[in-house]
Image (cartoon, rainbow, N blue to C red; front, side):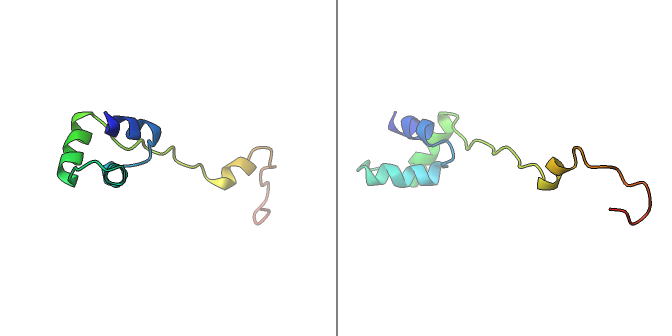
Amino acid sequence: MRLRDLAASRVRYGYRRLHVLLRREGWPVNHKRTYRLYSEEGLSIRAKVPRRKRAWRYRVGRPRATAPNEV
């Protein structure tokens, strides 16, 4: 239950970092058990939303090139 609580509050942490947090709290678990419980609960690291290219923002409203070497 504590592993599930930690994973819910820290969605960017994988099982290795959660294992360290559990050990700091005094839970006597090894990394293999942490991984097994992490997998059984269906937990995984949330995928980051990809950043859009910065230049894409500035293309809106820019005049189009009408001749060579204009931009």
